[in-house]
Length: 129
Image 1 (tube, rainbow, N blue to C red):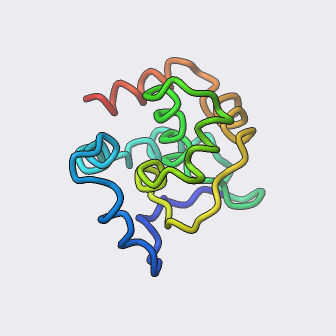
Image 2: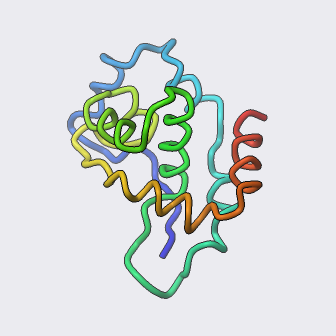
């Protein structure tokens, strides 16, 4: 089941982002400039609305892949870094105390949801546009 990604969850620790992630941080700028909601619209038909548990947000999954591309790191490394790098958590719109995904989820997302490599290119091009 696919739900629209919500903004950063209210947390007693969310104010840490203003202290730790500078206003000029690349990931903060990307979050402020790009509306990633188009990803949900592009991938909605790739999810079953009636079966299975709630899926991880496709927007967040795409953002993990974007982080991988920006920083040239592996699935395992991007997930590990998002565990402690506050700019990554901010970019992923997670509360500071939120747990991260299992790195195998990125592989499944690529194989099951982004089977069509043109779809991945479309999403990247829309992000850049």
